[in-house]
Length: 142
Ligand code: SF4
Ligand code: SF4
Image 1 (cartoon, rainbow, N blue to C red):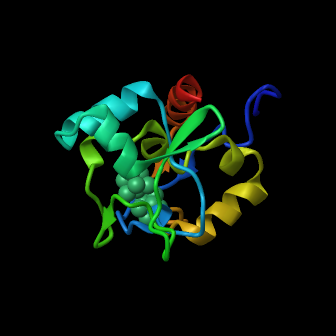
Image 2: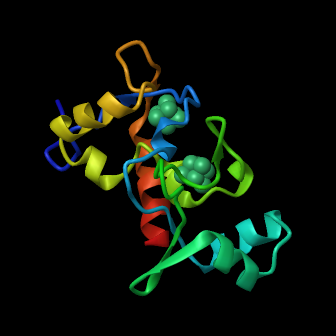
């Protein structure tokens, strides 16, 4: 029997990324980056922080987001369906689809599945501990 304090996905959720790149595309959104992530990506691109900021960041209130392509609204680091900064991609990207808004209900999860081909009935089950670890890591950067 499921304990009452466990989430609805306590038995895990089916997911395996196909690397289709769809979650990096439009419509408009934000890819939040904190100081450590900015440093890591700038270093990866061999740019100083100021140059990186001018080329790739936009300020939203007190936070920073990666830029999008002005026409497609895809993340600027998506090229030919691949992340060109994969090794240092932000936590937000690495944590997808384990975002609080996607997990708040079965309905929200089904909605997420419409845009993510890695969520389907034949995909392997990702255990609760893995999902919770991703959520916790994401929480640290918000
Ligand atoms: S949309 Fe889903 S399957 Fe495609 S790259 Fe993103 S997480 Fe992977
Ligand atoms: S940084 Fe990479 S993984 Fe994140 S949205 Fe951009 S292309 Fe996708």
